[in-house]
Image (tube, rainbow, N blue to C red):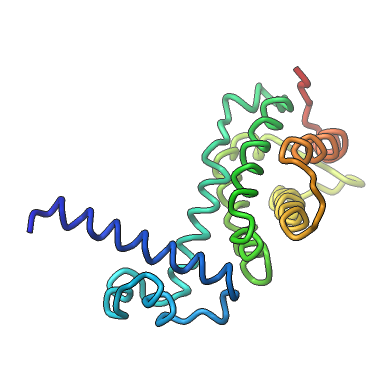
Length: 204
């Protein structure tokens, strides 16, 4: 069989496994899902599952990594930051797009922001954000009572707010729209946390 055709089959099978896993987690939660459940839903045998993933935790980790990449791939340093100024309007537009995507996959993000997965997602997000904006974060020097505040503390604090907000939004009955949530988050963060950190805000 040609290699290209085999690669397409592997990609298709992997997508079937991921789709089956996500739907099962949405239905009954991560802990209740077994490898056999995933194989049955994906219409494959267990050996095929293990040809792609060592266990369901590895599968879950890959999905979490994908979710982090999806959340951060739209963040462009040049578009959102000018010098040390944060372009609030651009960030609000980006957040609106992210929240719209989250709402389309509401049940999955309920699982993704709950329990142990919550902290794993926050840590991954923090690592990616620090890597993307390392030069900005390294140039900041924030002090409180003459003590320098560690940048990793600030990133942990900000990502906790972001993940916590998502969890509240997907688990509540509130009908707040993605653009309304983005506007609220930006308003609270821009008028408080960013100014405290010495970051200038550009509202245009």
